[in-house]
Amino acid sequence: MKIAVIGPICRDKINISGTQHFQPGGATYYNGLALSSLGIDVTVFGAYNTSEDDSWLASFKKKVKLIAIPTAETLTFLNEYPDPNSQDLRVQKVKNVNCVMDWNQLKKYDFQSYDGIALGPLFHNNFSLDFVKNLHKINPHSYLAGQGIIRYSDKGKVIWRNPEKLQDMLPYVKALFVDEQEFEFMSGNNESPKFRDLEKLIITNGSKGSTIITKGSEFEIPAFPPTETVDATGAGDTYMAGVLAASERFSDVYQIGIFAAMASTLCLEHHGALKQSFEEILKRIREIKIDN
Image (cartoon, rainbow, N blue to C red; front, side):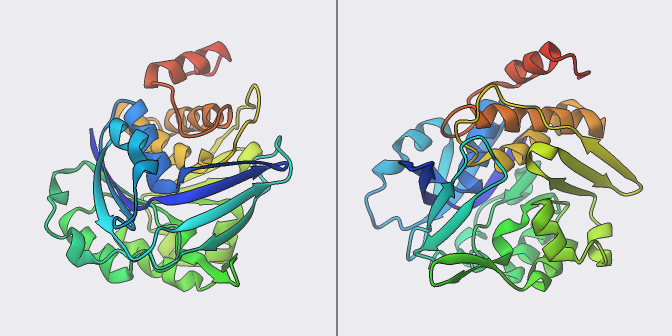
């Protein structure tokens, strides 16, 4: 399986109960590393300010093939978790938002050769509707992490606006990944027919589990408690990577969801991106007697 991951690579400042650390971040970063750990041939088309010192990405470059897409600024987020034991609570702030990807920067690449394309916008301006349309013409197998499309800044605080922008992109993607609150904001509780036309709609709900909706079927996927919650950043992005990787091995949607949920749990147990292999995740599933 060959996957392209497209989106900004941001700088994250993580604050967990007053303890701070800095790391690369964003859906593109976590997705790329997770897919690589799971044995997928992955190329990351990552957007950031390439005119600045990028030594902060040295470790990332050793683990994935990175094609840098230059932008005016490197998107920066502050992720604050007041309760280290809860993945469901997060306060976000953002700065350096001039991180815009233009289709002219990417049209020269052979996206037709990929089995899937994971889109990981983090802010509403990262790429446009025309960007998604042009990509769809070349390769219709795009998987969208939708959260970034509705993110705007109000004096640095992340707020949600313009759900119709996300809805307009849905005809040009194969699957959408959102959490429950994002979905309610984006859809008005699934009133839009555009959501029903998706091949897969994946709605995560932290420690309460997740739901995978396909045309005609709905699958409730349990969440698995971590041995310890160290850092919840990137857990949702890891779920997306788990779905993509498991889709190569399994045809059963429930099996795919179980695998993705466990991958997300393992991400919670340490700082940074998923480190376990595909087989290590299957082993953890077997240990808790979940049919894989």
